[in-house]
Amino acid sequence: MENNKMMKILIDENLEINRTILIIIIGLMESLSKSAITVEDAEGAIFTPYSYVVLKELGVSNELLNLVKDGTELEDVEALVPEQLSNNCEKIKNEAINLLKKLPKRVSHYYWLSVDKEQTEKAFFDEPDIKKTFNREPEKKKVTASETENSSQIDAEELKEFRKWKSNKMN
Image (cartoon, rainbow, N blue to C red; front, side, top):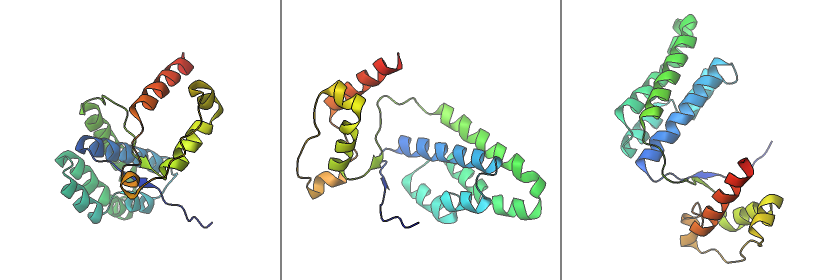
């Protein structure tokens, strides 16, 4: 299947980088323990020396770097002592969960997926519940190059309305 679309992930706060990588590690370890992915899949996603170096340069915590390092050794564990693979995955997952619990709670919602802002806004406001709640059409505006770099941001008022809508929908 050919895919010519690209998704960018933009995380510009160190705390959120740590949080996101920990969540990815937890998901990888859970998926690996359920045989939904292979060790190679997990390594390809985050457990490589390259990822370790990039994350170190980004300033993630030493504890998180140690988890990535432990993850790079999963292939060796699988090859040499396969009966220990499950235990190692569980250990990495539990350590990631503990680190995640120690992080301060988010004070605001953080949008980190980025695609074309106009397309995203159109799709967002075309959802029937959202369109009805906000009673508006998506903005028709030309996006400049500088705006594209910040396309993961959403207008504060829209965010406030969305949170109100989401809260009411959940009640």
